[in-house]
Structures are given as structure tokens and as C-alpha cells.
Length: 417
Image (cartoon, rainbow, N blue to C red; front, top):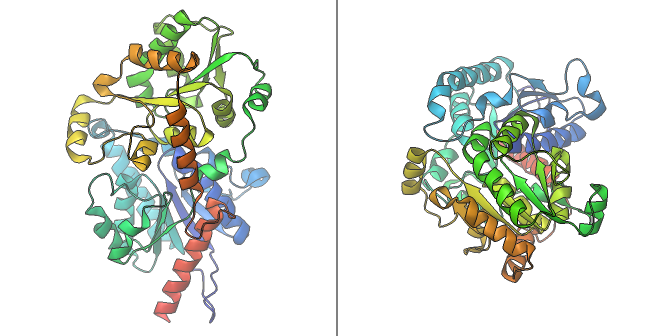
């Protein structure tokens, strides 16, 4: 290993490979890269990431060599669904080989894989076989509490550490000898502190009295293609009933065109009632709006943490859904509902994903319907996310992650000395 440990087992990381497979992982990776560079100023960072990881050096992001050496575009790995992945499989396998070859050739001190377990665990297993001395730490635990519980024992065989983002996860992995720690949820860094509702509206140039709805179409092209028509229909239905409602749509650049196509097909035209929001302003929008409709995913937990009444919707390939329904052992799709063990937030999934029903929910909230149970659930979820093992949240999730990484490496050095 390039990084050497002294007699006190001090850690000197000189080269770390970080691999993210999708936008949420890239955001985590960006903060992690910043925290790594703060602790180890001369560190070399390489791997696979997106905008956040490539720009993790701030003003020095354009330096030579780059602050993050990106092997290829992360979007090559952004495929969702058992059926949808098949056409992309040859490309994904080529990228997998490219990553493993890079790791084998450069022999980093550490490899950190972030989420995307289908890709990253295959990479980790190959690296473990080729380079057993390289330490492997994964960020974001696989949902063994939801399905495929046997994975906990399997991943313990090839990982050195696991960084969990939900406080109840470590006990699922620790019995198999895997070092696992709740390192805080990234939401606390992304969303805290948020302005008040009125301040958020003022920052976005919106009226304090307007009725605002946020529509989140998803971050993957496949999601927008499958659900774009449904969310566009919701917009049209709500607008038809409440013509004074303003709709905010945070959109990543690679899906904005698809969203615009879906809106055009639903005969929704650009107006003062429809505003696209820059991705970096999405959390401001969450605080500003009265209600939101989101494609299922991490965004549901983000909306809950921001205190926004909302529902989720999702639709996928029928075969993928049928297979998944047989495998998944949790009753809900929304992570907040799973954490609470009850339906705090409405879920409109697959055949229940009906624009009319979603629009009814939105209108109920806008009309001042009772959302007190949802508010209570939001408060409970916030407390769960903020709670760390020692009851403190003084450090950011990224800093807690670095502390854990250093502990794993020190423990490994101690065992080998």
C-alpha cells in the first residue's frame, strides 16, 4: 500500500479510488472527497463520479492533474430495473473491467464504493480476489432489511467496512464480523439549516400567498419516460381545478428535455404558473411549497426531512415489478413509511399510479385538509435521522465517515503488526 502506517498506526492516505453509480451517490462522493482532501491535502482521488465529485476541489477543480480523475461518465451506469439493464449489460461489463483494471494498476490505499451495489459489489469482489491487501469500504448499506437478508453475510466476506446512513442498519451486519457504523445521514448536511417558508419564497422570487406545488420527475431518464405522462397529467388536473397554483419543477440537465416533452404531450405550456428550478435550489423549493409529488426514491426522505407534505409515485416495467414484488419483504416503498412502520405518506405505485388520485391528494392538501398525522411522522423521522450512536450530531456525515474510515484502517494496521 502506498499509504504507510507509523508505530502509532497513523493513517496517511495518498490515493483513494471512489466509485459512485448515480446522482445521489455522486453527491455523497463529492462531500466525501472534500472531507478526504481536508484531512489529507496531498491525496490523489480517482474513480467514477459525476459533477459533485469532479468539482469537489472547489476553485482548484480545473487544476492539472484534476482534483478527481474520472474514468468515464457516471451516466453509463445509471440503469434501473431488471429488464431495462439487459440492453446495457455489455457496456456495464466493459466499465466494470475498466474500473478493476485501474485499481489493479494503481494499487490505491483504499477503495470506497458508494451505493449502486449491483455494480460496486461485483467490482469489490474482483478487487478482493486480485488485490487482497487493498482495503474496501462501502458507503450506504444495502437494504438487507427489505430483501435478500443473506447479503449481509455475503458482503462481510469481501468488505472491510460499511458506512450506514440509517441508524437501525449496523446490527444487521455486525454479527458477521463486518465493521459497520451509522455515520449520519447526508440529509443533515444537504438540508440543514433551511430557511422558513416565507424566506424560501422570497429567495425564489415567489409570492408569500401563492399556492405552490413541487413536481419531481426523477433523476433517471427511464423514470421520466415511464412517469412523465402521469406527473404532467397531475399538473394539468390540479391546474384545471386551481388555476392560481404555481408548479415548481427541479430538473437535472440530462432529463429536462424529457420532462418538457411530457408536459407538451399533456398540452401543458410554459407560463407564469410553471417554473423550472435549478437542481441546487431544490431544497429551497421543498421549504417554499405547500405540497409535493415525487417519483419514489431518496427524494421522499428529503421531502420528509424538509417538512414538506407529499406523496410518492412510481411505475416500472411490469415484469420487473412482478419479480420485485415476490422478493421485497417490506410493506412500503417510501423509506419514511418503512422507518415509521406505517403509511405516513401516500404511495401511488404501479397500477395505483393514477393521475386523478394523485391530483385529489394534492388538492386536499392545498384546500387545507388535515395533514397532522403526516406532520407528526415528519417530526419523528427528523429525530431518527439526526440521532447518532452517542446522541450527538456535531459532525457532518462526511466527517463521521472519514473518522470511521480511519478507524477501520488503524484497526487493520494493528491486526497486521
